[in-house]
Structure formats: C-alpha cells, structure tokens
Length: 176
Image (cartoon, rainbow, N blue to C red; front, side, top):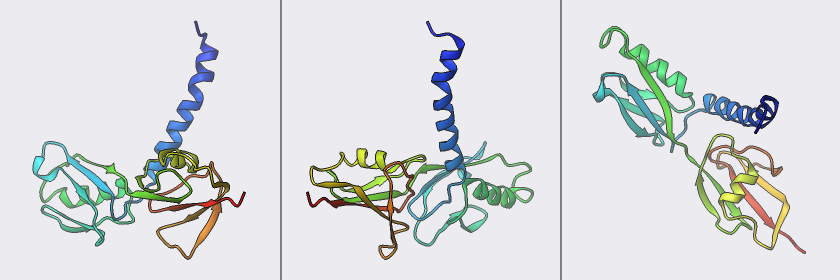
C-alpha cells in the first residue's frame, strides 16, 4: 500500500502537467481551422459548434458577424455575453471552448508525415510519436520549425520544446 507521501510524489507531477496544459489552453488564441463550441444555457438556438474559416469571423444569431481570430475562448465568451445581455437575455450563461484544434504539420524523416490535430502541451517528441517515430535515416538532432506556415522563418528546436498549431516540423535526413 502507498502512504500519503508516496501518493503525493506520484500525483504531483501529474497535477503540474495538467495545470500547465490547462494554462496553455486558457491562453490559446483561436485561429482559422479551429472548431469552437458555444453554449448558452437554456438557449439551444444560440448554442452550436462552428469551424473558424479564413475570414476569422462567425455569424452569430442576434449579434451578426463577430471577429474571433486572435481571441481566447474567454474573450469570445465575454463578447457574446456582452452582446446578449440586456437586449436579448437578462443574464446569459455563456461558455466557449475549443472543440477541435487546428493542425500542426510534420514532414521529412518520420514514418507518417502529414497534418495532425494540435493538443495543448504537445512537444516535439510527442508529435514525432504521433507521426510513427523517426525513420532509420532521421537526423534526430536536426529538427527545424516554421511557425504559422511561414517557411522563410525557420528555427532549430529541441525534442522537448512545445509546438503550436500551424507549426511545420521538418526532420532532416542524416548523412551517416
């Protein structure tokens, strides 16, 4: 049986990892390709999921076009709350969350290159695992990242670095 100290030693890293992932999710800004879930308690006609298109806006009932790209879910919630309060609802209960994150991409010397859904807390190591791992010819210490799809700006990154949606990881081929 575990004593209290052993349980704390076991649970503390898990709690810290969960808190870090939650903090990253809390600061996450919405971009084109994300799917957000909007729920207004007791109002089914105001609750739905929507994929953010390249315009960066959504058409919301009674409020019209709302720009959401670059905002956090909390900021979107506040915009919707402010728009509905008073004229339509007395005290709306609004919740906004990310239903599906946009993708990151991995190419080069991995077994299954391609696009994969982003997850908060995702590291380069985990992204490589999602792509089936390194090939035999992979230069494991030569990993480059382009951010926001800009292939002209690349940087070398480490295996334990965090990645973001729209990142493109390139695993180079080893010469030996």
